[in-house]
Image 1 (tube, helix red, strand yellow):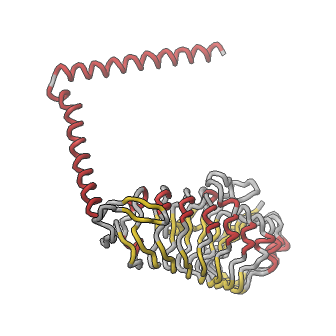
Image 2 (cartoon, one colour):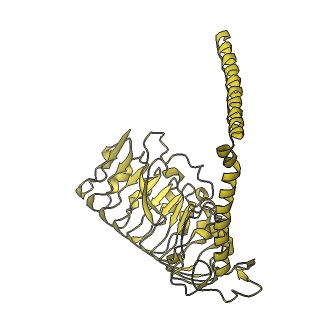
Image 3 (tube, rainbow, N blue to C red):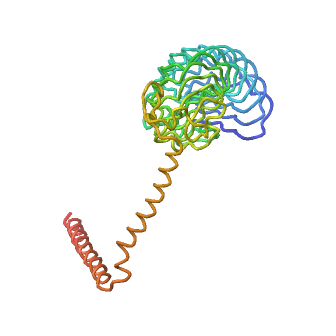
Length: 391
């Protein structure tokens, strides 16, 4: 059993085409080097190969058909190179064991093959920073491994080795390197392409998604109200598209959401309030949407100050306070919290500080509780020791 790990070196030149004389190699990692040329055709003569990392090099050309023979691959990481052409349809036909497919930052063109959704074990799909066009396949709602909670995946490699895959994944706008926790990460990143059309509602059935990034495309239409079904979502980036309509009120149900970017669309109406939305104070989240209003923006909504104080968001009627009312409530909340703390402090501790009888009774009670606990624990340990002696 062999692992060829040569990442983060200064290797240059082309990969040799002599892999048909090797055997029992499970992992090849030449990422973060200065390699050039193309992927050698013989590399998939390695019948046990489960992980291929060639990211962040200067590899060129189309993906060779020989990769189709790597049927045991769990990880295919070819990101940050100069690969061209279309993403081959045979990936969704032959590499059915894939759990991670990372092709970001290349020069791929054309549509995204709908049959990628046949990769039932796939839980990381990263096609960002290419020139992909047309629509997001509705079949992407069928990724089985993205529909389950993140505790369900186990390890990446199937060989039962102690080796842990490691990979950089961009979540919440930050490049994070995962290793032991990599099997728990569920991500779809299609950002910075030329994708058009609407966001398929089918994506909202991927209940296990931690991060969804569709930013930097030409997507249109409304954000579906069903997006609130993505209960595990921690990061959502829909910025720099042509989305319109209101921000769905169902998004307040995304209680794990800690990163949100809706900037530079054509969204309008009142920003939902409640739950996580109360923590999104960064105005850049909503920048470039001049028709948005309400907290935390300075732009008030037209119905502010009326008796109704209501707004239809995503088809659901909800009542909202005006920004002035929100500020007033926050001030009173802070004042009442401080007053409550002061009263509670002096009611409980005041008599102990200034009344000798109360203070003596208090410490006497503490001593009694200590004695009771000590006696109970002594009995337990004695019985435990006697039981062990008998055994």
